[in-house]
Image 1 (cartoon, helix red, strand yellow):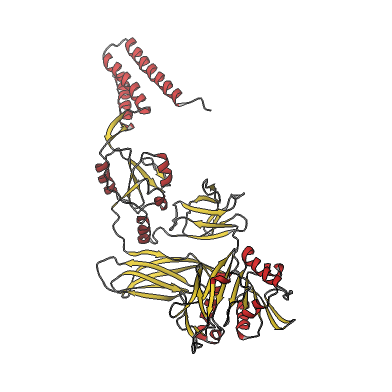
Image 2 (cartoon, helix red, strand yellow):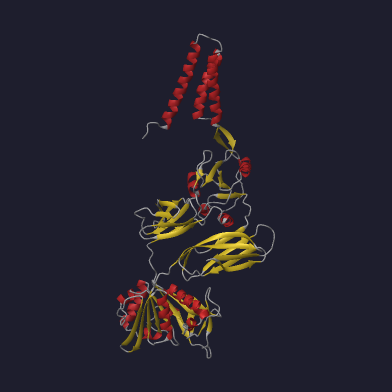
Length: 597
């Protein structure tokens, strides 16, 4: 511990100032020239007192409250600050959020930290562009009062998935408001790969919109969202998206009858790089097998070892009905305890007894003449899809419809059985969609939806999440890691435009599987956080001028605006040190000048 404690410095300076005053007084008293003796004595004591007051200035009572403070966000107006200080009192505390340290105002990086430092704080007045992203976490104990903040023209809201799997549709929802009261129509569009892929007209120059695009390649993409009135582009924003490759699934196809449905499905899954095996029961004791993207192996008996090799089993009624008791038990155990997914292509008649979760579904015969193709629907499905139905599907409590007909009746349903899922589909044939050029995308979307619902869950060792909605250069960006343990080595944040930065992590005491780190980007663009192990996560840092209107709306959302109903109070504030420095210079100058006279 240092010997120079505050008490030591206090008494040391006090003794020094007293000795200085006594020494100057003795020197003035002993001087032969007794003229202006009183002036020298007063100047000496004033110089010593001024030196003491520079270190320990006295305080004064000023209007202000310890229960209120002012937070300065980027873009605040000095005139608004002066007006607010006149209203609240000059003694009100000031903070700057996320800015470089300044000598006149302390810097604040977290509202949670401010709440812990100032537990008596009740109201926080905000000037500038909105609030930090952690405003919602303190809104229950701290009233946030925004000042100014006129509406900004442009895209007022925007939401899209920052990560999209290849083959999945990117959907962007948002709202737009024009800069003026002009109600001329505005076109809003999404531009990707050099072309406008989707657009919509806002007839009154404002309103909500929804745009869609199906990415064609994996990688990091920066699409463009634009708004145009006539021939003039009035707003343009960047839409960063990481298009990810689909993780290949291990799919086992089991059928008792050779047919087009399973063969087309096998070939399609193979072209999507899934690992596929097909077993066709030609006759009792005779099977045909086919393998794609994996080595051959024995498929004659469904054992626990064989089922552990696959994520999804797709079977028909005949296969499940003909299972031996040991095979049926292995299938049920794999679904319940290991998370295996089972998809049954149902046929007319009762469901097989070997189907896990059989009680969640029931089949009814189709009415006479209802064997014609029926329209099928699901979110974002092509409107032209239709298929014959083998039976009428009824779902019990706990089941969910994945695909419906034109009357919103389920034709494909899913239920959870232990750790796994079971899907029952009554579509008799989907392979004709592959033969129709206009329905090829619908075939892919249908089977992608079913496989995503039934596939064995993939354990995730670690996963990153960017807490801030709009990361900016020179602003703190919070990265949260969800992992079973705290990383043994510090993760690294890299980008092509700045050196790699190690990210210190802090574990959450309430949720030990969460740990957070704060990163300060210096440039806009794509960044990647690496670790622990092989975990990688891309995230985008937006330019300071991007998405201004949207960010303001997002900042306003979590605030709880409260009236300024606290009674006027006073607080004590130190006098400005400059006054005592000037007093010391005046006294010392008087002593020097008097000596020369």
